Length: 174
Image 1: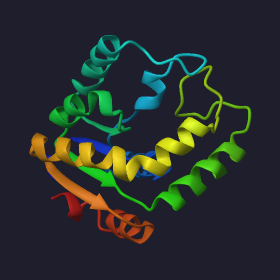
Image 2: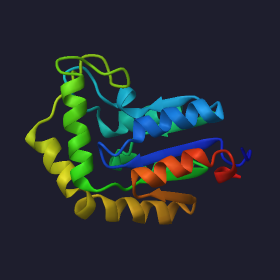
Image 3: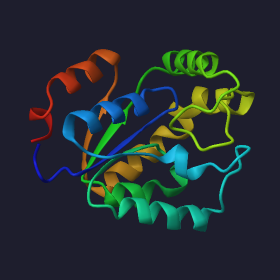
């Protein structure tokens, strides 16, 4: 892998496969994976104050190498500024919803490993609405932040593209 890409931000809609891709990248490239859900959420699905979250993110982003899993639009500018490469997963919303429901069933009543303690898996109307409207409400802001950051962006729009991307590592990142 090129030494230019030691900090990789993986972004996109919930259910798109950010965590799965991040783990695969971390394993393949020998980089630590930072699942932002683990650091963002407080027990009971409580969100931190924005400034507190910005401070936590700054500490995480200052590490010399990582694959950072999570979008969090409130701090997307800081994360993208610290990244060397952005991988944006842009899968169809029905697939994202389907995957979220499968994850909910799989972790029913439990907290998944990449989630903060005290946050058992849940799917509620707000979350479904967020996923359904992501392309219209969040994607333009995400793409604007990506353009403003001026970093290389690799956009993956299907599971086939994700598989092809992984199959091409490390040549893809050189």
